[in-house]
Amino acid sequence: MSQLTIYSDQDKNQIFIDTHNATEIQTELSKIGVQFERWQLEKDLAEDADNDTIIQAYQAEINRLVEERGYQSYDVVSMNPDHPQKAEFRKKFLDEHTHNEDEIRFFVRGQGQFVLHIGDKVYAILCEKDDLISVPAQTKHWFDMGPNPKFTAIRIFDNPEGWVAKFTGETIADQFPRLEN
Image 1 (tube, helix red, strand yellow):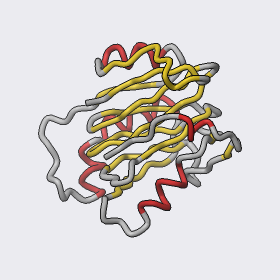
Image 2 (spheres, helix red, strand yellow):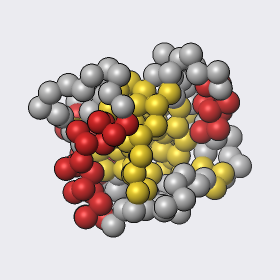
Image 3 (cartoon, rainbow, N blue to C red):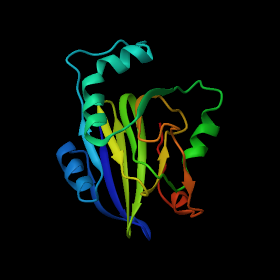
């Protein structure tokens, strides 16, 4: 179940909001310019659906975002607990960083946690199956796939080069709870 927890950036024990309600999550995130939606298919995809089948299943929703915002490319990424480089991939995303473009992810399966540092607050958003999140360009954030990652996500880019991070050098990500899976 999706979850939003909003902390003080000075104290992880000071929690302002902790909710699983999708409408509340969407409302709170819209206040800071973050898009959060739920996309649901008429029928479930097979667990072993290939990337082309996944894209086809969500093509209408992808096309809507491409038309609305001028995004240029999209793909599918998957991670499983048996991946030999899962620890290295997790570490790559755990430090606070920004992007020159929006970071858009739609979770087809599994889960991942985006954590945004905006003003004096930290927004931890646990995204699960059917969740779309769009983190605006230049937003300080990090992503945690957990020690045993299991997810498939559609990534949508407005930069044809894909994911390009600028790390802030701050250690704030180390001060907040990690995803355990």
